[in-house]
View 1: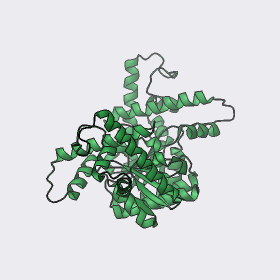
View 2 (view 1 turned 135 degrees about the vertical axis):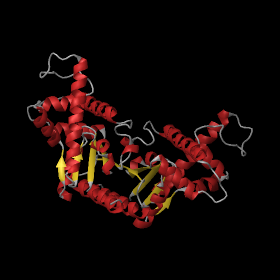
View 3 (view 1 turned 180 degrees about the vertical axis):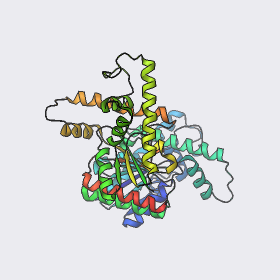
View 4 (view 1 turned 45 degrees about the horizontal axis):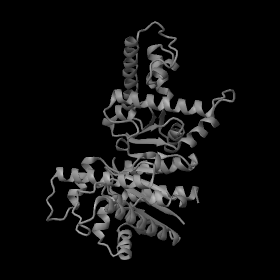
Length: 205
Length: 205
């Protein structure tokens, strides 16, 4: 079985790259599917799960679900969700089907399966542009808003990873390939990355 | 004209990868050739030039050439060599021939030519093994010796780059592709990287 994990900076296009890789390779694709599975198991709201798992700071979003929880309970809730997430990701791997998993620290959780680990980054300007292009028409975030959100989400990802691993999010030492998407057409980049990963799996079956 | 720059951690195999890329693409290849050119221009010893340019700490190697220089003169000597190096690298680019340049901060110096910038890294264990395998038969460096040399050389590279650029050596933001060579056969990795770079140049002619 072959697994590619895609970690990414917010706005870098890692999700699109992962989806395109799955299409090119005809592999299964997991991203928000993992949150849906946790929601189905736990009965919790998807957005709450997403926020709790990804956001490093505890007080920067409204906690409508458990408004009366003390920070210590929130911490427990978060750890519990991380355990649920790990279970879902392990179940995906246990299915034995080739797959792409975007985010969720799958590179750490599935290390024993020797996935091919990609980190996707981009220049700040390109990330802002990408976010602006993809924003809903009724959303009017300024560049400053986007930069703040970008920083907050990436910090959350780094902090979530630090719960699970002593190795740092985005550190080149932890990935097989770090790809900067700036200047690439995704339709050209995706097959180039797919070919690269296929060469890896031929070399490391 | 197309230029690929290869920056690399000591022991990661970046030089071999660069050489193989040049062979696959039939492009010119520059590495120690740059030092030779500076030596020919300046009349200085090649090893002295190499040490002065790459070593961040001023007192860790014998300065046989200018033993009486004060640190301030050494600093001047280093800056002068950096200027010479920049001239040589600019001459290479001005020739208009497609080329691969390994090290020497060519990614910074030739930024206006929009080179495809690769950073090559590897796991520490793999780098130590590579250094041991490539050491001359009469050299008996311990693992500790190699780790110390590795750290010193990479620190020197980072410091040299900091003279020329506000961007950091090895920071993923500054490269198109960061490749970890651990687990790769160079004969398989090199064509995979070459294909990736060719896709880039087709996209960004």
